[in-house]
Image (tube, rainbow, N blue to C red; front, side, top):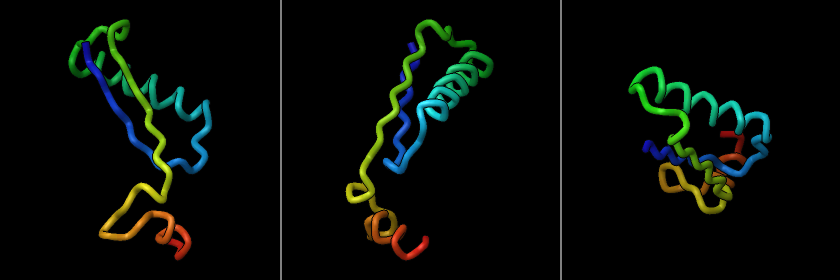
Length: 67
């Protein structure tokens, strides 16, 4: 039973985009590792940019500077 956890910043991913992610990951596990899609679990965690940092800096600040 594969379990995949996708973490993305909370910046407006649409439901349609999330559906594509889930379908794509499920298909990839099925085609590459021969895993059963019926038992494949995919979780998408959306993290506020104030709770995610890169290189010691909050993503909110990086986004405000255009990075």
